[in-house]
Length: 191
Length: 172
Picture (cartoon, rainbow over the protein chains, first blue to last red):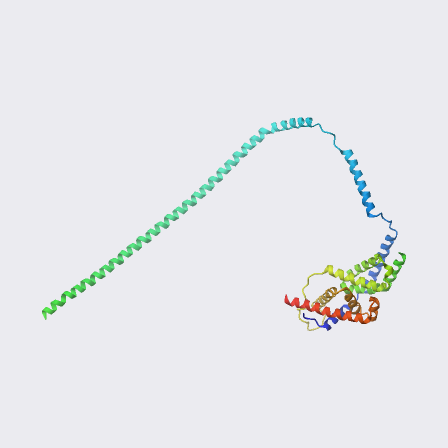
């Protein structure tokens, strides 16, 4: 482990020891402490002794239970006639539902029509786009096939021309050789 | 109760200034020192078993040191070391040199905060408060020789701690 120089430590500690607060700050701190301390002890001296926490908790619990009991007795709902409530609810629901049923049906019909139309339009647009795309791809494929055929025909024609030239050269050479061989016996006979 | 209040007020009159200076040195902030001073005296007034305390001054000083280092611990932040900064050519009071000095003091106080309580108390009383060994020994209930040994060990430990901090800073 590397160590720092001892003199350096002493120098820093000396720097620390030379720090002095201003006299005003010191005086203010002491006065403030005295005031706070006097006030704090005064309040603690004459403070009424509070009951123990257990007693306080017990009293709070008793009060809460009493309050709950009273509130329950005062605000408890009266017994309800279930049959009457059901009949009233039924009548009320019937009246409110019958009025709005037709309206809801119409709205639903309109909504379904709108959705179907929208869906059809979207499907048509999508299918048109897909068809166009497929057609473009087909045209590209046909063009590529035509180009390939053209290249192949051009290559075949080139090969035919090459063969023709080779045949011509061979024929010329053959005729020349034949002529040479035919001339040789004639010269010998002449000699 | 009345006696205690009177004793504490006497202590405030007698050692208030030195306690405030000590708190300022250990926190490097006058406003914090003021707050801690109040906290110290409230703490002293609420201390139980006061009849066992023989030396109020020493007890208050020890409590002040602990309060200040508790505050430092709460305030601890990770700061980059300024040891990498080259030494200034002149000793002028430029903002940079002020900043380096402040950083060095913070480092030193953080390292002191990592010492154990007894060593820290001895070191602070000797080197920060500049008190003689005999006085410290009397306040701590030890012999002057023991206080000297404590200070020596504390300085050695500080060398290790600060050297380690510097090494870590270089490694970074």
